[in-house]
Amino acid sequence: MCKDINNELIAAVKNDINVSELTDFEKVKDSICYKLVNTEANKAILKEVPHIDKLDLSVVFYILISEQDDGGIVTAMIKDSLAEAWGRSAEELFELAKENTPKHFKGSVRDMMSVLGDLTGYIDSTDFEIEVSDCPMYVCSNKQCMNGASAVLYDGLLEEFSKTVGNDLYVLPSSIHEMILVPVNDRFDPDELRAMVSEINTTQVAPDEVLSDNVYIYRRGADGIAVA
Image (cartoon, rainbow, N blue to C red; front, side):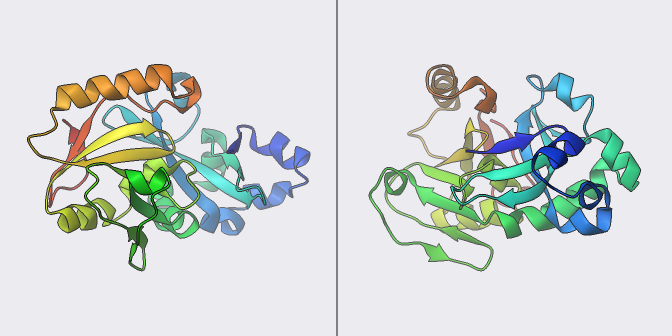
């Protein structure tokens, strides 16, 4: 379970963390990561934090303080006050997080059956893991399955997977922790997929983990995703 800390200084005291290590940019710069959140649902929070808007989503930034033995993580959200103290813009934080996040949270794409327990082999690469099968749906996340929807932002991940399956990709926001990738073909209609995502968000996803009711599309050779 992810443990997010929204107040840097209070969190530091509660977790016996040296406050100076949070405010000292040089000490934390390699631990600055990003995650995706829904823009509308988080509009109050976004007024206080540096962020980058992407479609109906926003990229926000946090300091990875520690990883727990139970697989959870302790983080501190980066607020405007801290970014200003560092003298860093949202764009600069994004470039840092773009490098750091895949290092701390290695990306992966697994077929749905594998996730449900039918283990199959991975195709390994240096940067992330991809596996292919006859299953039409794949789970895109990170190895920790923590804030893993942001893995779709990793350089080359969607590009490599789309080449592997030989098709463009529908990208379904399953939750803040994962995206579902579906190779584009005549079997799937964007409106039907959108209805499926909305129903799952309503019935199976905790409200604070809902990412979006939209369905996105990645076209081979494109720079990022678009609304389908």
